[in-house]
Image (cartoon, rainbow, N blue to C red):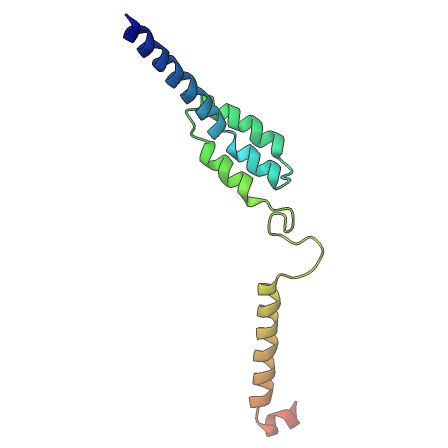
Length: 113
């Protein structure tokens, strides 16, 4: 008789633990968004709760959404008017190609121009 009650207690403990573990796991995107000072923290939190009812289909997308934003660089798009390092490098390469073409032009063509 004691083992029946013990088994029931263990079963209830496991079910409750799994229930709270699922909720805690689905709160991870919100915790990431909160740590990164994400502008959509509340939406990510609500979507995490909605994902519990959609069989967790949207949870991976929430994880991606929460990790895309960083406070220091935002969404990766600079709004202060400065070019990214890659764009600056591409502009420099274009200037160098133009300079090489100018230097390779024969002197006779330079005089005509």
